[in-house]
Figure 1 (tube, rainbow, N blue to C red):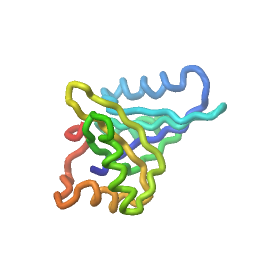
Figure 2 (cartoon, rainbow, N blue to C red):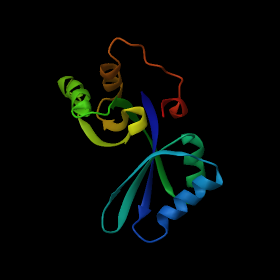
Figure 3 (tube, rainbow, N blue to C red):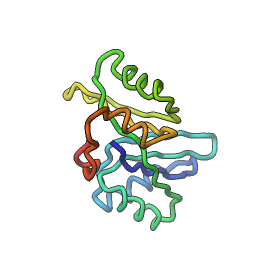
Length: 143
């Protein structure tokens, strides 16, 4: 499923993550996934949230540099080799994975994976196989 990921450009100093989380809290936003890629001076905070359009506007309103990126989100079996099997499908289709982050939900026996790929539409088609994409559902339903 293609979902919206929010990326926030942040200075690497105390309090910047708290500033973002405070804005999310003020708007009653629920985090679904988060990662930070950092350098010595700056970082890119990537978020999957229940209301991406609202979050983009709220963070921009707080003076933060924000970008929305479509990414591929998928569920994989929470067992050894579960992610490998899905990544091999993308590899066989010639799709490059630019970055990935994931977490497991042991009670659900599944892991959730977010991938930035070079051909999003093709990747979604590969992962859905013959199934019709369930368009119209947002991350509220997916996560």
